[in-house]
Figure 1 (cartoon, rainbow, N blue to C red):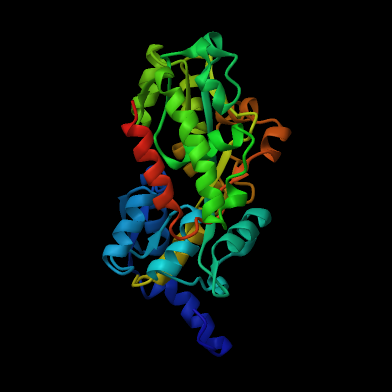
Figure 2: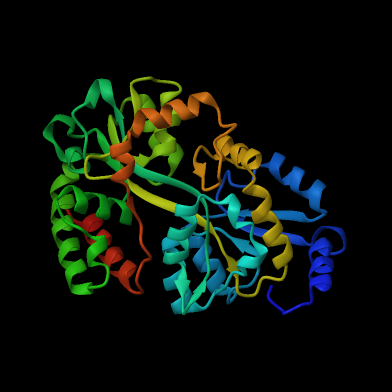
Length: 353
């Protein structure tokens, strides 16, 4: 925090972070991002204690809205859920970069996240865990599925699955030759894209075994063979690949959809020092590797893959060559009101016959 302190005072303040002012860090995060062994190491080193609440993007925003940014000291929404949420609800407070060891972050991800989470000249987000969604395919049964719209091919009728969520709308749009992210700033143009995707997804309904909701559900459908191709996350595909070499994550021809989960400070958090200590701690390469081995996704930490399991590295490299990495479509900030348009589209698709 920038208070214009004299150098000696700054040193005392820095020392007090761990030695004089142990705090309880109330962390609002995703499953796997705060493993118990990491928490134990952090608590032993800093004297802080950590209370973890696991959630997802929608619930994180809802919880922070309900308390006007209170109840938690550090949260981890995706980077496209920050600037617009701050504009609408004022639920975060800006970061003090002097409290952050920026050298621990991959520079390109640090810069991209800063650009996407800046509001009124202040940066609100730091990158942590990143990954993609795309296709998980049983290549022995559906090797012809290489793009989102291939899920609607007659050859896989009745044996595909995806969620009725915004990634499905966006993935299908790209596969149809449209550019939804470029239309984010024009609500009418975006609605036009949604209308085209809506028609395609309604026509595709006979191909769909079920619309999945949870990760365990879609993994079980793929394991059983009831579903041979799906839209899902890279980690789910790699987990399935460990048991069945035919099933794996496939980066779609139109581009996998890339996300970055961040660190943000809730507006009424009361343990900022513990929050910054946690950020700097988990971005150390050895700690970042522990998180990747638990969560399955890689982090924005420099050398954060140094101690990641060889099996996970191999599966990642099997799904992503350099061209596929270069073709990732990174989610930009979501403009206010856009999700209402998407929600109405998804409701009509669900209600259609």
